[in-house]
Length: 239
Image (cartoon, rainbow, N blue to C red; front, side, top):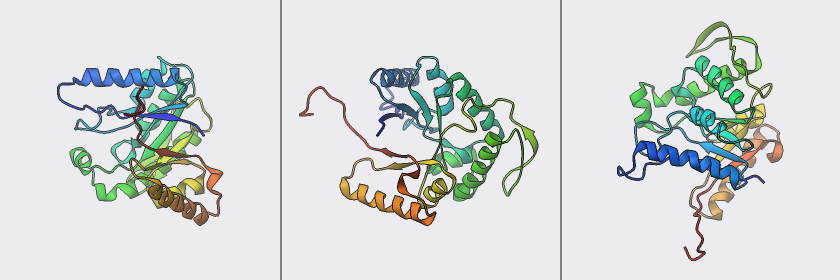
């Protein structure tokens, strides 16, 4: 079992400046390495104070220069909000400056408020995510790739900024049962979330994972699974 921190960079009140929130989040990543955590994960959100990280890859690139051993991950890059060809180069750049410590988490997003302001139809997010992940995998695995899909048509294209980790950084997928099944089918890792509830929720999650693995004739342990839970750090056990 490995332990990681999930850095949301939430602005708890408007008395906090965006600068102070972001600098505190960077300090959390450095402290995570000092405390022995395996990975620091960075969220992506837009246009509200729930999270002030618009680009988790930028956080990875910055924190790479302040750390040396901890792995740095995106949790997640919301693929339908990106231009996939550009994202491929940014993935390569982040992995280079992190000396091969990038963990690439991708997801389809869920906040309609964000999608509306980017002019993206959230109802199409699952299909867009699936196609964009196809493009990302092509670009990471092939020196020259092309794509003819519903949402993107890309002529033969070379991504010049290549990842240090070959053929790809570890890829993590967020989402429901269909995306769990794809993770097992293609050998990717995936995220599941159970913020507050007890063992009943974990039991339900376990059953979903088992069904996804069985649907692809895989073992549950064939990929890594990241479980996101809330905890409270204090010097006082009573708290």
